[in-house]
Image 1 (cartoon, rainbow, N blue to C red):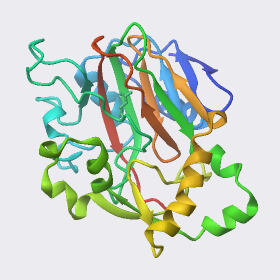
Image 2 (cartoon, rainbow, N blue to C red):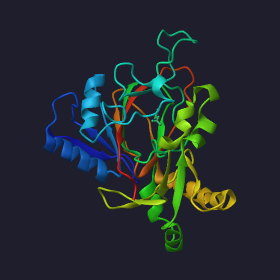
Image 3 (tube, rainbow, N blue to C red):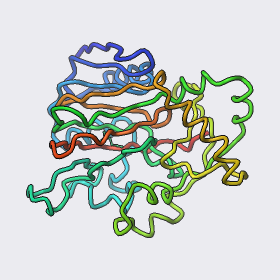
Amino acid sequence: MGFTVNPISPVLGAEVTGLDLAEPLGDNLIGDIRQSWLEAGGLLVIRDQTLSTEQHIEFSSRFGPLFGAPNETPLQDTVSRYLHPDHPEIYRVSNQTENGEPQGTPKGRAGAGTYWHSDVSFKPRPAAASILHAIEVPASGGDTLFCNLAAAYDALSDAMKEMIGTLSAHHDFAQTAATQFAKPIVVEDDLKGANRAVHPVVRTHGETGRKSLFINPGMTAGLENFDADESAAILGPLFRHATKAEFCYRHRYAQGDVVMWDNRSLMHYAVDDYGDQPRYMERTTNIGEVPV
Ligand code: SIN
């Protein structure tokens, strides 16, 4: 199966056509997809896919172990209510309820990821790829913004690169919980060890060898060994720099898009601007390596 890859923005991302992910995919083809993904700066938009949940999981598992898979780390207790009831590998993002009633059981997490973040960066082994299948998309709105943290790193001055090159940062789900989750939803155990980690501020991508910033406003609680004011004085300008429009791409979904992003070198922000228009996404999350 040949496929076509076209860049979708100068700074990151490529659109793929001519692939059917529901077909059995050989190792060479998976290798080609992985290569295209890395060359596109870690963002591929694979168009026109009709996938069952099982096929989505099967495709995703070719890129590494999945959070929630048998014998693997679960994503998180706090979001367990949003996981697919039969497939804990699938995190559901939706503003709909199961029976359509306003007070019904949520079909997924509404307004998920409405802040700049890299998925589960607070884990000792944060996410590598996240693979999202756009099943129902609003007529307008519900885009996701992505920013390229490797391009942002490259554009820093040499003096700044030298200064931050030896720093580490605390990533903590408590930071996310405080701003993004209504209190009763947060499972207390999630505020303990498994969702806290210290990672280098600059990480080197395990596959491309490229350096990138590895901090995000949603989950990075502060710099190791710095007090809160000092930490904010360094992190604030870095966050502003990383999210400059020049480093960003805004994805407008079409139904059937499979969007694959690399949390090791990108941040993303899901725009919550679509009101009651139905939006339903299913996402898998690959377990990445310990950042170095
Ligand atoms: C997320 O995974 O952070 C949500 C992405 C989206 O719904 O666009």
